Structure formats: C-alpha cells, structure tokens
Amino acid sequence: MSNQNVFELFSTDPVEFNMQNLKTKLVLVLMNLIRQKGWTQAVAARELQVSQPRVSNLFRGQLDKFSIDTMMEMLVRLGYKLDVDFDPTDSAEPLVLKLKKAML
Image (cartoon, rainbow, N blue to C red; front, top):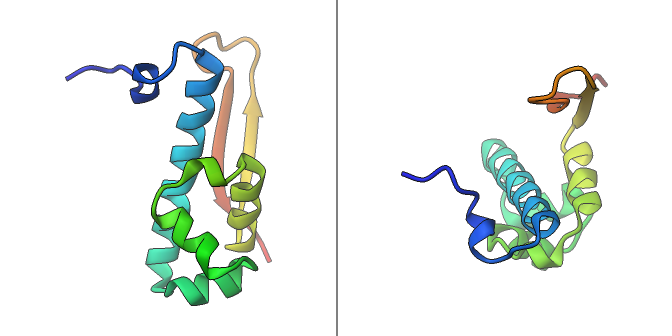
C-alpha cells in the first residue's frame, strides 16, 4: 500500500493537494462529531447556524463548497477549539494542530 497523498494523483501543485487534504480531514471530523451527537441534518444545520443543504453538502464531501475558515467555525460551534503548537526546532513536525474540547 502506498503512502502517497491521494490529492497528489489529481494535482502537481503541492499547495492545492495539501489544502484539499486539510479540508478532507476537517470534513471527516465534522461528520464524525455530528454523527456522535446523533443529530439529523436539520438539527446539525440549526446548531451550526447554516442551512440544511450546507450540511448535506458536507456529508456528500463537496469540499469545493467550503472554506477552511467555514469548517473551523463549525468546529467552534460544536464546542471545540483548535490548539496550535509551533516548534521551529522540530524539523520533522514543526507545526502540530490539536482539536480540543472548549471549556465553557
């Protein structure tokens, strides 16, 4: 099995395939959290303050319809925050993103 990023198959632009990879991960997290809550698309739309067709687009994986900012806002509305750690001395993984439950 290859360790190749699937987006490398569709683009030679490293920025494009890395952005698509990040969007994919965010969509998967959002879908998982919505499913864990047992929400219908209508309930998820209300809680995320978006339309039901937007939630449908999310579940159909229509990445082109979402910005990373929009997905981050949805995560915040679900009660999470993104914690970013930067260590310039770590050449293998200088930037680490962690999704954490927000303290209310």
